[in-house]
Picture 1: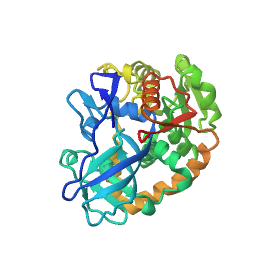
Picture 2: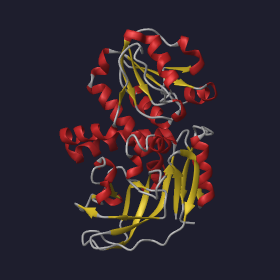
Picture 3: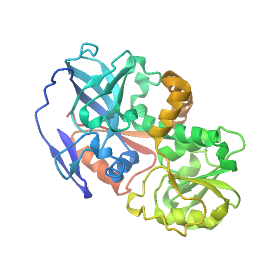
Length: 356
């Protein structure tokens, strides 16, 4: 079974039943056990064409499968190095099965070398064996599905800002501050000396965001005049064009850098006007940063640094995160549409399965 979304109208969705595919030579069949669903997946859909996210798990013309992160088991394999029963974590479709072409299989995992994925970012093509994954903890699978890809982005942004000496500023302004990518970044920044962390959020989410305890200041979108003056970096996770224009207008030449990360406000992206004050917004593409740090530190070095940052972060999320489990088509469709339309409690997150 597959969950399909219309590319020209993300509100149109349906389920497709089909028999599990049979692995051919050098192929394996993954059975998807469960996956997380957050606003991050809405970003994948919103940028499906622009960033080639629809290309990972092709569907019939006009339809796409929104990528998710989760766990799967190898249930059939014609690859000598990959045994049936192997459990992996990685990029999956919202489906019951995925046919892969494993390459470079080793104790860490494998790359899906399927032809249609060859030109896509390799970060998304790697599947990690749980027994060799430095982050994996059987007691925290939910957190890994829901938060690991988001936290990995947060980790990479934090590293990028530190590596850039915060562009000479001491303040970081983060939109969509109640989102999990934003709060993960704020958590990491809050552990650094001399960095003021400012969160922008809606009035309805302001109390929750302040309660997280990782922002020095929380400012509602309709109170931007309360933003402090001085040199700052803007990390745009909302992707709201009107908000971006207002933040740029407030800081003007004092805005040191403007990074576009996500699109939780996917329906308000807007075009960047030529008259926009301050620096031109720059898209932060996490796979490019992964490539750089993999070259700098090696894959094991990058994973070890991520694991060291992950453990205290997961401990912190246990104080506020509420996981909602669902199985079957109806909970998946409902959760997806709630996320798409912003009907979400920032303290809640969905772990889902189509297995039944």
